[in-house]
Image (cartoon, rainbow, N blue to C red):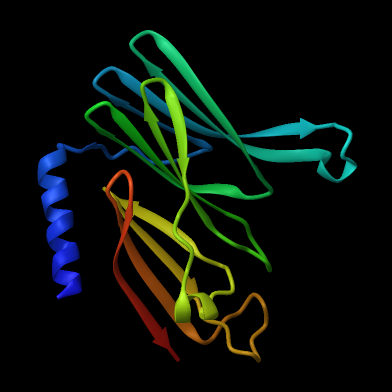
Length: 195
C-alpha cells in the first residue's frame, strides 16, 4: 500500500508540473542545454590552489555551473577535490531549474555522490540526498553510482563480503530509486541482491 501511494504521488506530480527535459549528455567535460531561452552549462575544470593550509594545496577538480537567462549570467563553483563528474541532467519546471550531478572517484575509498542544485530567481540552492538507514547503511561501503531519469534518481552500490579485496566486491548489489519532487525525496523502492 505504501508503494502504491508513492507511485500515485509521483504520477500526480509529473502530470501537474509540466517538466521540461531534453536529451543533452555530459561529454568531454561539458554539459550544455537550453530551456526557453535559459542556457545551462556544467563543466569540470581543474584549478591550482595555493593557500595557508598546505594540506589543501594542489590541483583540484571543480564543478562550474553557469546559467544564462534573460540577459543575465549566474555562476556556481564547487570543489569536488579528486572526484570527477560522471553524469549530469538539467530540467526546467516553471521558473525553477533543477540540475542533477553525479560525481565519484576511482580506486579504493571511492564514494559516489549526487549533487542537486535548484536555481530560482537568480539563486542557487544545494539539496543533499537523504542518508542511508538500517540495513542499507550497514551494507554500504562506497563504490556507488548515480544515474537520473526525469525526477527519478537511481543509486547502485556493491556489497562487500569480509573476505573481499577493496576493489573487487563479490557480495551482490543494492539498488535504490528515489523520486525528487523539488523539495523532498520519496523512496520508491530499494532492492538488495545478495550472492
